[in-house]
Image (cartoon, rainbow, N blue to C red):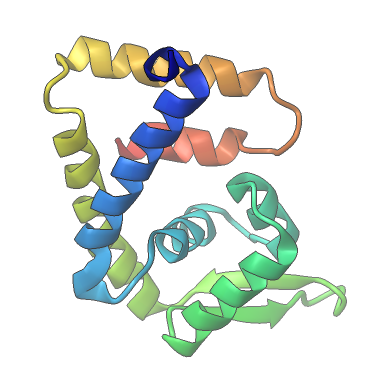
Length: 153
């Protein structure tokens, strides 16, 4: 039965949460992917694009397009590393810091609303179980991003 298929349930839940997050970010003209890219850059010191891609589980091309948009919005900038000009570091600009703070509140509220039918202990247990499932994957370095999400929620 498809209703009991884990993949289907996770996909449906993720899709519903993504739709709610997208609606919550409309006032800032920001997509969900742009928000999470901004979050990774804002919460990482000396962030370089390849590390951000790994934390987001995103390919370089997709991340570059998001980064271009965040730069156009004057939220982030790319800078060459002082001692190695081949290395590009990402930095959040003051407008990006302000926008991130506002949107982080909206995202947290949306996530809480999404889980409001669960007692807090169940919501925390769900988070721990999902983290446990992800901790066994070596495909992407999502540890730092997962820690960020855990602290923010």
